[in-house]
Length: 245
Image 1 (cartoon, one colour):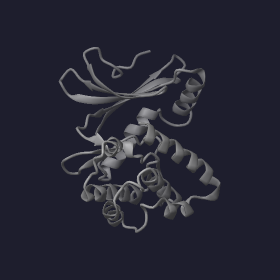
Image 2 (cartoon, helix red, strand yellow):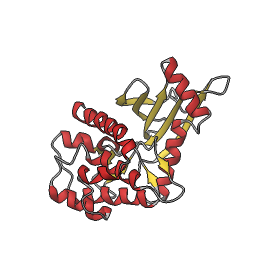
Image 3 (cartoon, one colour):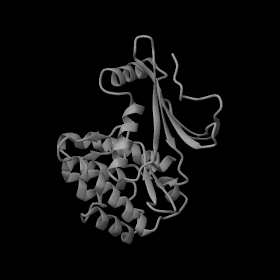
Image 4 (cartoon, helix red, strand yellow):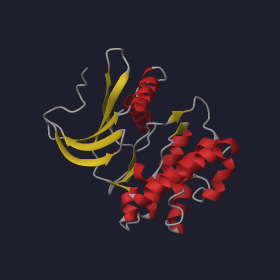
């Protein structure tokens, strides 16, 4: 078994950006001096391996491959995203996925969650840029499913931000549903609506093209009743991660 872009020996690890049981994110320097980010999906337990094998073998492409495709889709649609370079998949002798990696170009930006926790509030024009790019996602029927503050990098020059981590995203063949729109906006605003100033919210809503979307109370009615409990669990998990990081 081999994976030629997983971790070439000539590359240096510059920083560990994130680490969990099944996902690791590292900033690397390649042989040419280019700084890249490697996101690795691993399956350490038998349950993880079964899930990874099935999802990446029988139910669509491996997670890293799907994430690269989604980044390319958004880039072509004009949405600012981190630049995807390549994905690689490690399979066992039976063809089941046991590990996969995504390489992206490193960004000099800080993620929004870290900025806010340091007490740094991006200018209203940047919140307007957030609203404009999320609106564009929805115009091209893209449900991100991961619009948490940690998944947007804020930069000092235009386009002022870049989205990342569309690994679980869904592209609708027809019009995106109102429930999917509301889900994206809830994931973004639920941990933020109490700390972001009114002027910044107004800039976001103006760019998004709809009043009131920065207030979770206005978004919940669009979530089907059968999905509200699971959505609440996801939001609670993301809010806990926001507070603990």
